[in-house]
Image 1: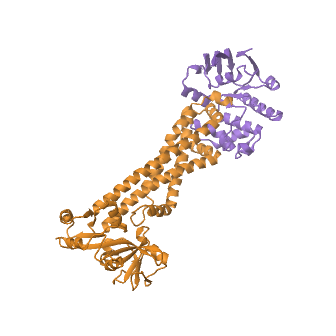
Image 2: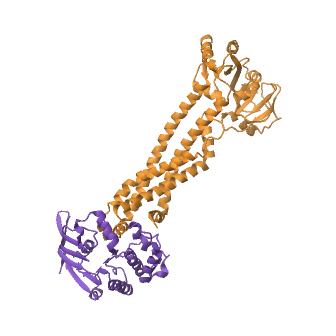
Image 3: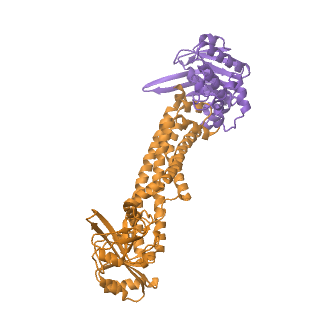
Length: 217
Length: 387
């Protein structure tokens, strides 16, 4: 699905050269819930951004269905993000003035696709928010907001879902619900990659990748 | 849901800021539209008023053409007088159809501690000299009858049939008619038959100006040349010269006002740019999220441009509404400060001008959105979603 080959990411911070990723190799496959764990500054988020074509490597290849995204132009990368990737963030990033339904439909504006209400309602059903369709984000709990963000990540029918600490802002009950949701998506055929600091959740994933100082260990 | 809905939602999130920005643009557009609309109305009214008058030229004592223009149209006070001989000489020329002397002066009334503005004219020529007037009552037929301007009538509570007295005249004057409000200086005058005014002002045979109508308008040039040669100490101003003089004055005023309006618009545009730039910076995370879920740089650019043009377009529409709602107030203010304003409605809804002003606001929106839109489109999603 997505294959990282000898990925390096180096950038400058003042006079210092920072090696965010050092020769990282990783395969992400369908039907798998993959956890990335490691201390802060280990390169987990940079790795996730490489997988999501949000960032470009200094060296190595990002192969998506065999095509090297590292050599793609920006419009092609945008297309990959629209069609193949779904992002979930720790802070949810819902638009405050839009209803749950419209927040879920937001990516369709950018992919120039008319929203299919049936499809959006089916996504809301999957995340258990079919009764909250017209609510605003301010009327939802943290767990519900994250479930809206998951539905939004799924609206373009992606093949890969990338979640950056999706349970980081949630209590235990809600973390458990979100985790189960992500696991069910993986078991329905998606590739799900999740960064987490929660070792208990990480151990229940199909695979765990440990990172330290920009390397997979 | 599309970009429009998204832009509207974003604007509604900062209601007060959006509203203040709209009001700023509205004020500028209102000023611009009022100036353009007023100028067009002024020119149209001026041409209409000049086309109605039957006078071809005015003979006045040598002096300022602007005073003449004011005198011709709305009775300015010129402290110089033509004598009887001038009127006699004009009468002696070939091709003259009508000679209408006018005597305009201030009359201090010590008894009532006021100054009356007196306008003497041949009442039989009233329709030629003042074609736009509407008089309630009748036009004076005797030397003892007068017309009063609407302000005079309101101030002294006068109506047709009432009597008016002056200290140096034994018998009073009967108000034959009251001039309907013209919103010009005409409203402040009392109009007397010429001979009565001459007697009242102690200027027997005197006139401030003489209006002349010729039999053949094509001969105006030749007649005025002859007059200038034969009669010293006079100035002849044709109605076209008066009109051009007023139009030139109006054009200068328009240029000055437009400069101020454009400065106001520029300041509003900077305000709009600042406001949009602030929302862009505040929404950095959100823009990063949008980029992550599939928005291209062009999508973000377009979203910001739409937001800005929605603001300025709304401001433009509101500006036109404000301008039209306040048109009476603006018109009455301008009539008070301008020496001459044509009678009739000046500020009116001109669809072409209104549409042009709104489109102008729209383009101001596009122009002021370019920088914030560019900044937004350059936001690095990786940095933005790190928070």
